[in-house]
Length: 128
Image (tube, rainbow, N blue to C red; front, side, top):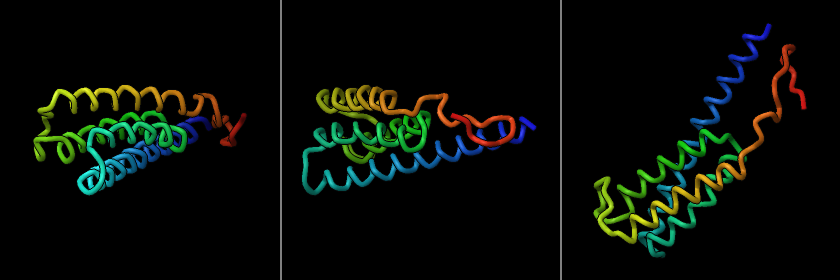
């Protein structure tokens, strides 16, 4: 009785994590493309801080953390100089990337859903 509900929860959690990873990656790519046209790249890193909070609220915390790590990789390769390599040469950009990761983690933890909300009971229905 309990094992199918547990497997369903794990599958749903995995699906939410993958969805939020893809969502954060696409938003990071979009921000990187916009940065080439309009804004200063380091300022856009701080704009991305709110994305993990929204993703943690909509999907789950683990997905927001994985998405934040993927976004940091996207920004290292596609936004911050030297473009195309995973290193960041400017100390200012490196510090901005650090603050994006630190504040993004805080936003993800603050806006994440409580762990006990919407638990599945033995019968498969949600309890509050």
